[in-house]
Length: 134
Image 1 (cartoon, rainbow, N blue to C red):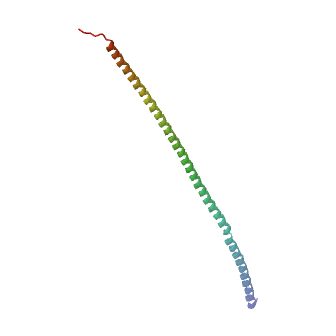
Image 2: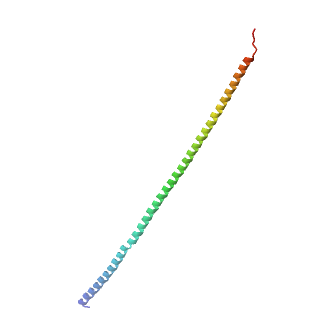
Image 3: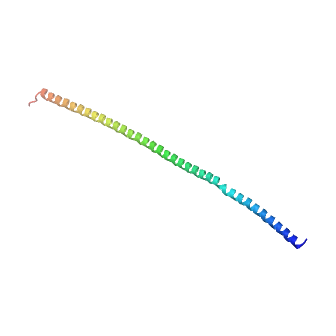
């Protein structure tokens, strides 16, 4: 082959190599663009996962608040029962004191009646006693 033919052949081969490299570059850039577009759904999924995590955290927080409210209500119920119990105890003590006072008054009345009877008997005895004159 002559030199011109070799140069022409090498130019043709170089041009075809360049064209095929350009085609590969376009294909590669298209693939890169597709790869760049793919993260958008992934970001949406990640965003959804983050939102669901936030909702779970809020739910757990709400559950804790509900438990605290229930615990507080239970404590309030217990305190109410304790207060009612204290009121009942006070009333029982009040009634017991009233009974004690009534019993003491009754005992005092019986004592006074007995003392009065004793005084009357002594007086009668003194009135009926024969005079002892020496």
